[in-house]
Amino acid sequence: MDPETFEPFTSGLTYPMYVLTVPAVAEARPAGCLVGFATQCSISPVRFLVCVSKRNHTYRALKGVDFVGLHLLGDDARELAELFGTRTGDDVDKFAHCQWAAGPAGVPILQRCASWFVGGIDRRMDLGDHAGLLLTPVHVAGAKVTPLMLSDVHGLRAGHEA
Image (cartoon, rainbow, N blue to C red; front, side):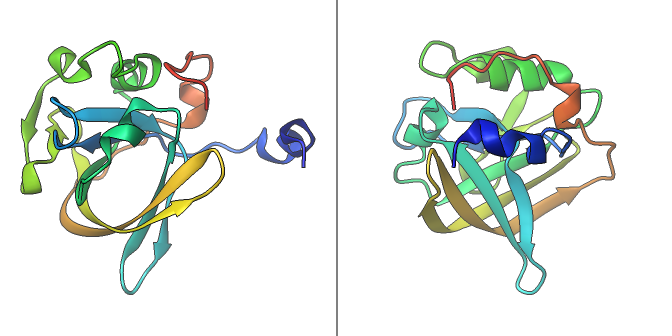
């Protein structure tokens, strides 16, 4: 199906925005990207699905990584969405422009985000132009936040096309 044919179905949807962080394993520095395609996909056991564009620098940085971080962006964190969504790790060390610390399993934790988890990668899936990561949360810092939504970042130009 042509994506433009399907667009009327998805055009009214809005969903929370996340930043996926990846420890420095295959790359010399950590990597991260803005993620819109993500959802809890099992209650018991707890599982979360995150989708990453295959054109994204962060996708390449996932090679050899067993754990990642997923940060729920609050509605006051648009600048993090801009940093991780409009810049590419091919050209910029995004982590030099924000506060972070190494967390569980060495995963970068963004200090601005009150709600995040580190998850083990249980499965990697080919989902077309995106790759799916099936995550099992192993460490959670979950503060209630009003999420930054897709509609709040409308107009940002991605560092890479999807």
